[in-house]
Image (cartoon, rainbow, N blue to C red; front, top):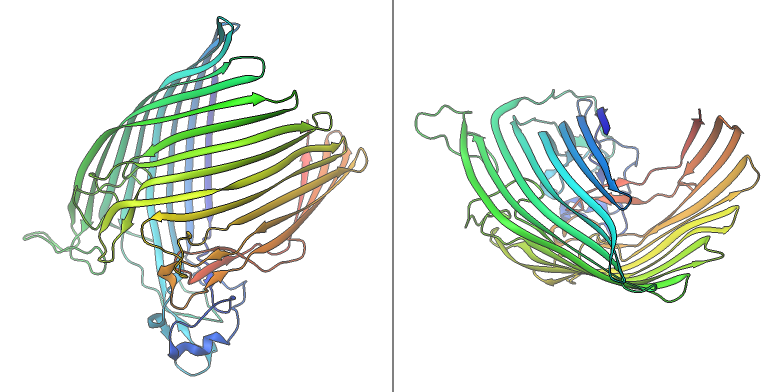
Length: 512
């Protein structure tokens, strides 16, 4: 029997990012703001939020597991888990576009940019119970490693509506965070989603011969999702509704009350052949599905043209195939792998030019990857890999700003390598590098945003020292050469998060 309880409380300050002004490929959003083309980047240490911004969350998770060995080859486990996550945040961010820029003088240092308050007040709960049976046995000369079971899950989410927060504009180059718009207050609106799932599954690895294996499995899910939402009437802006007769302004009015049920079939199959004792080749294929509203517990009535979560939409379907090889070398100390992969996603929901949604999209991600992991010598350890991938839209609107079918902000190249050497029994040193390739810009950020994001290299290093068997120290240096790079960029391209600057972290580890 296993019991575990986890409680985590976090109080963080969110950062909505900084303007992309001055990045390579940037162009001002209008002729009247052309001075921004030559005014340079903002300070990467700038904070465009307020002193009232916060991100508070509480997580409670309880797990109970029973395990029983029926015999030497068969084990049954029953696991029950309950979890609740509450999150409440206020994050201030700049608003892109020429209409949000105020120019009191011709000096760009006096210009200001409008800000918006991004808010969330949400509670998520999940209760799941899984009974799993694993067994190893033979049918004739064929060996089996079987895992099968049943699973019941209930997931709920409640989003609470909050009153709008009014924020003053912020200076583009010299932001001031010392304002206090106050916290969030609920306005009576809410959205409630619940999904109940019953699943059965079975997976088997078949040892056909000493060198040849087959594996396969299937999972059947029956789901039922309910969703309702209420909006405080009489408001303004996007999503506002008029109060019905006799209903006071600010009162919650039900806007959606719907449900959807269905069945999902997910399966996978594969084969593996050992060419030698140290090397093999394999091939895998898998199919997975996700129903409408499956990732956000939100549904819309059938035929509602302005929603991507309509109940009449089909489940999104992903077909993934992979072929590869794995080799153990240097007395099996080092593992080398290489693989080709492709994932096709069908039934993607696309937004039409008139703002409505239809289900006809198809995307593809394909490429190859190579990796290395293990020890070159007993004292020299390496881990690394390279991935080249092409993400394209096979059916649907081209959303890259250059008009290509490439998915925006998806790198084609990624590389990582870390090497560590045990110089003595007590001293270890390590160093590594990371690379992310350049990315295309999205068409929805075509005005006043960078045409692309540059690729970047980042180097890291570490030094370890063991004092004795009970105490050791480790010094990590992240971004060793203090490289300036774009770690992430928002969908519109108006703001981004700079990469972590050179950072030193000293850790003491105690063993007892």
